[in-house]
Image (tube, rainbow, N blue to C red; front, side):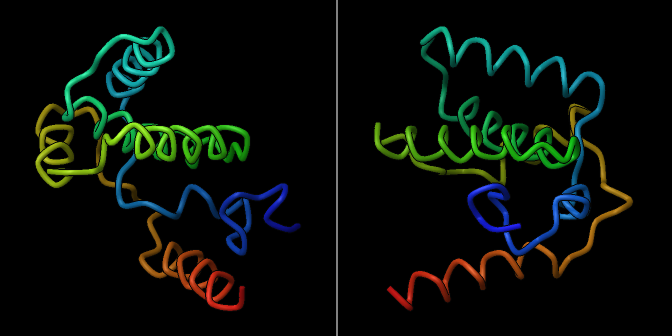
Length: 128
């Protein structure tokens, strides 16, 4: 499977749930859906809410092994960057999600897996 069908290639889709150190709780899923809905409706969010949307979206998409949602997460990140809404203070946003019990540690986490993807992307960009 190539990057046209797998946005996190060369990581196999079945390994998506192992990519990140945290996963959503039930309350985190509800909060994510609220943030996503507000974003889609064009409501203004705070920088912290945009940060949390980015984090929760990738946790949601990878936990569900859903390439379509990963592509949507990537599109949101690109569109936010295009609007000048960059990732700032992500550490604090993530800490707040943890402290609010909206995300918990991922027992399936494999720390080297995401690096496999980022190294592939760097290699691909350098070859162009």
